[in-house]
View 1 (cartoon, one colour):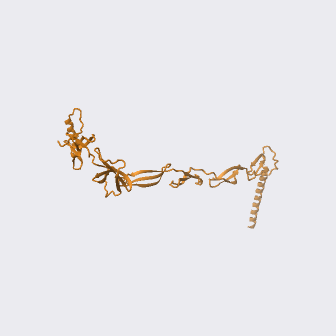
View 2 (tube, helix red, strand yellow):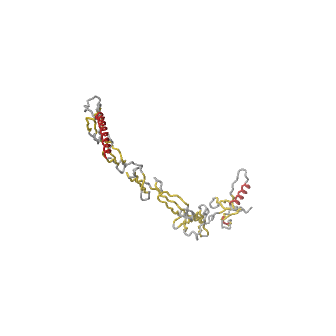
View 3 (cartoon, one colour):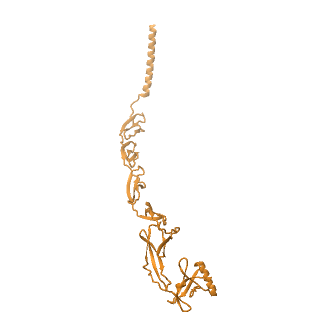
Length: 380
């Protein structure tokens, strides 16, 4: 048993040796050659370019054996700076920006730079801090300009506005004799038409505008008056109109005359005062026997005092009848009208307008003048 096993190993080793020899022969034939001189034409360069940061290289490849030879190192080129700034963060009008300069070959960021802030953008001016115009000060305001991007105040200018102050007064309610009225006073600026002050002013009542009349009766003077203001017509009443007073005196403008056969009178004037201020006057004439000493010459040549023929009406006025000797009725006579017709028309007019009396005349025998008298028709 032991002998058979040994023989088996021996045979195996022999076979293995044969195989190795064959393989070795084949390999030698295949790969082992004589050294190549690399001189054949057609050798080529193979180049790997250098970069900015890494070396490159190149070598030849033999066209016969394919071996690489003549190896060379190509030094790194180094960066080439491009001065153009590439923006990372844009600058604003309140903050600087950032950027960098890169290699013009490989674009590697080489140098970081700060980008200056940009200029503010001016907006339209706006009005602020307006001060209104008053009586004691003019108006003013501020023109302010802001940046439209960041709202930063760029400029501020105060502007004073000149004003011209004037005033108007207009009637609101009219005063009347008794009641006060009101006016509206407005102080305003002529430039801006702004009302600066408004005031309601009381207008004093006008008081009555009396038309005064002074009457004389048996030595007594009686003052009366009627207000002429529209829609008033108030009659003077001493118990009500207590602020009024009056004084009666002889008129300095009209002289009193002693009675003659022509006239005789005394003129008085009443000066009317309101709170001591003169507001009017009225006159009264006291006839002093205005017809005294007038005479009529009778048919028989006698001169008779006219008062012998006088009558008196209920008011004490002197009158004469048409039948009185020497009295002639005064009347107008139209063309083609008879005396009787004209006289009748005169009496009719007297009844209509004068309370029944007409105007007559007589010739004074003393002064030889024609005297007008009041005549009643006692013949009717």
